[in-house]
Image 1 (cartoon, rainbow, N blue to C red):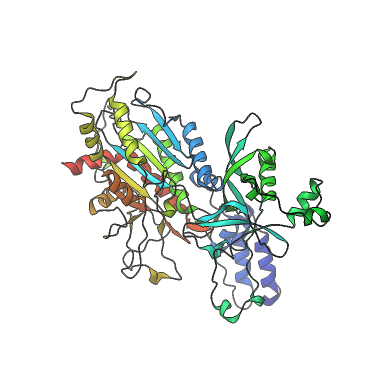
Image 2: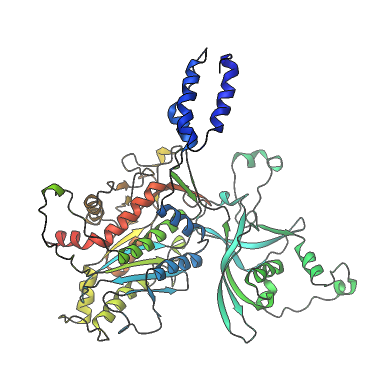
Amino acid sequence: LRSAAAFRAPMLLLALRGVSGAAAALRAPMLLLAMRSVSGAVMPVRTASVRLLSTAPAISETQKAAMAFLDGSPDPFHACARARERLEAAGFVELDEREPWAGRIAPGGRYFWTRNRSCLVAFAVGEGYEPGDGFKIIGAHTDSPNLKVKPRSMRDGSAASCTQIDVECYGGGLWHTWFDRDLSISGRVVVRSEDGSLDQRLLRIHRPMLRVPTLAIHLQSVKEREAFEVNKEEHLQPILAMAAQHALQAAAGQPSAEDDADEASAPPRAPTGEWSEAQEPLLLSVIAEELGVPASAIADFELSLYDTQPSAICGGRHEFLMSARLDNLVSCFLATEALALHVASPAQPAADSATSTAEAEPAASPAAPPAERDVALIALFDHEEVGSGSAVGAGSPIMAEAVRRISGALASPGPVPPTPSPGSPDDLLAAAVSRSFVLSADMAHAVHPNYAAKHEKGHGPIMNHGLVIKSNSNQRYATTPMTAFVVRELARRNGLPPPQEFVVRNDCPCGSTIGPIIAAATGIRAVDIGLPQLSMHSVREQMGVHDLETGLQMFRAFFRDFRAVDEQLAR
């Protein structure tokens, strides 16, 4: 450190790179003093920079759980399976949609059911529930844009001795982001046993198996270089293997067409119509190996492609979460987690922030909190990315049926007699609807620093600044001034950051969510909210890690405090 300044700078950088752990705290001041003593210009190194080399904030339990949920949910089937695991661990019991529920559910109970294994509804009945009480609902969706394997997966006409599979674009993806990614396959498979019985199994192949390569710039015309245009039918078909058919035939001891001239010259066999005839043999072989069954046992499948890169915390100060499918698995995770925590240890209603703790008189014998009366419910729908118009989407009768069936079952005689309440079943259902509220939770568009002009200046959400209320006067969102106020009031009462606001520019089209669909089908009040993110519908998206914590706190506050806020507004 006593040599010339030009010689010392590289040595100091090497010394800084070697600092790690607790030693950094001791060496940083010494290094800074040494750098100040160097003759010549002082190097522009700050104490904060040195600390960043040696410290990394611990990942919170919420962040760990969210990343595990994201990584374990490459498709709606797996997302529902992960949510189911969390709910069962919290004491929720599965209901069968095909059976009557009267006498099966009771105040204080926790229940869930699934439809198509890609849509899940879970609810907890308050201990003090009375017929006609309301529903506190959080709605989200399990699907994300992706490439789905077509019903006939074998792709005819593959060139360059490559084996490809046929895929279809699902939803409005940013398809150029799917190029040059390490892809694999997940979904569900129907397996037929030797005795003829059928079984649905989840499939997830963890290793990279497929790739959609870009065309080298040297082979592109001048016009093609100006803009990356994707022909979704021709350019997005992934490569599975090289000459896979020959490899399979050799492994099975079967002669190839080149080895058997008679077979090659023989007329083609008439198709039998078997489902397996239209499937890529190598794909069936890989699936069979993964499931531990013979390929002949695979009766059908519903498969999607996914990016195998796991989620990660990144950023200069570890402030970002990068992952696939943030839209909208983050909302599914937070809704599930909030419901599980709500029934595990329901917290006291938040005190009004205007009341000082110091002013409160200590009670000699504090009264027990009032029993929860409403039904806390989450609904995780499929097919939102394609309009929700399906048997498992928000456009289905699922939400209306849930409110009607739960209300009816709780008002019917059973092992636990209901509290006597005047009114017909229809009157009680109407009362329940009028007392209910939906948080339609879907991710929101954060301001992109490179495209800031795309946002309306007064309504630009920022990552790590909390929840976003989404409004649109043309009813693309379900938010009304009063339902938006409920969210702001819940945030105020619980000391959360004031919600941000999003309104699309007048010269831009506005997307939509499940909120207006549910509100129109049920008559339940609703508000559209979300957490801000970048790169929505990309194969890999970005959000702020602090928003995870804020979102979870808001969802828990909603389950805990909504009734108190609503009763004040109803006066």
